Amino acid sequence: MLIEEADVPAAEPADPGLLDGCAWMAAITFALGGTPLAFMLVAREAGPYGAGLLAVLPLVAFGIGGIGVVAALSILDRVWHRSRPVLRTVAATGALVAATVCLGSIIDGYQAPRLSEEKTGVAIAGICLFVLAAVLAARRSERSGALAFASAWLLLLAVVSYSVWTEMEVEVAWLGPNSIDDSPGQFAFTATRSGEFVVRFGARSCSDGRVIATGHYTHRPDRGSNFGPPMVVELPLDVLPLQDGDLVRACVRDGFAAATRAGEVSMAPSFWERD
Image (tube, rainbow, N blue to C red; front, side):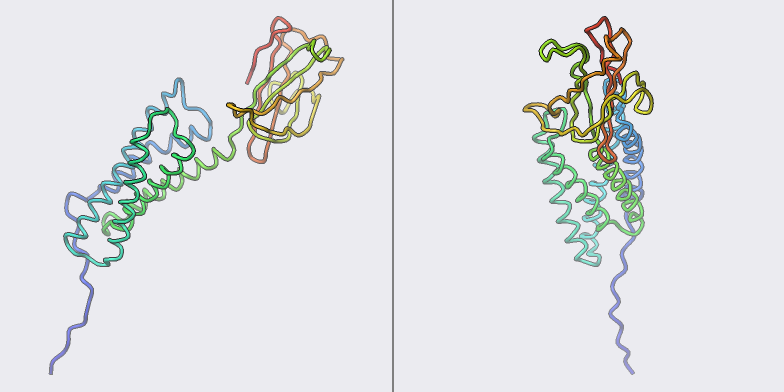
């Protein structure tokens, strides 16, 4: 009696030594750079002269390059061993090619110290495709490392999105008497987005001092600047004339985004900006 053999899919061959640990190495390198970068973005502090960024960005770049190499080697290994499923290999190859095209266009045209908004989107898409290619093509021994990299990348992307979403700046445009408006004392500030504002006198922070004005600031960006038109607040007569050391602070909030800036009188009618 003949028994037909069941059509059992071939098991994935073991990874060659060249691939062992590569995904984990890329994930750890990326995490070593991405973690402090996330803290810098949340704290909005990159260190003196950007030294912090110069230290961590190479680690982030090496991690991204490493996961790209893992994806390429994993695809080559799958093709060489003709391992199943074939659709995963095809999808990973397409993602790797698309990622290479995206990041290649960034590298070729990257000259400015900061990527433009359009180029930033292309860069993010390219990295996402790199990660997708690695997850699809990685063998069992490397899949956990590829997934760890994907998790670290998603966390960093979430932090970057939060930082951009809550980014706001305030500047003091004027503090003191204004002969044009025939005013004995005015305070003017600008901001990079609309929001509710509070102006405080003698405030070292947004939780102390005397409230002298509240309202809504409407942002309309001027040409060539992210800051909108100044909001002018008349100072009450009982704080005039201004004396050296007097502090007037603007606090602006839009949802989770908030920023503050103060003007301190120094040899009136001159003033200095203060955090």
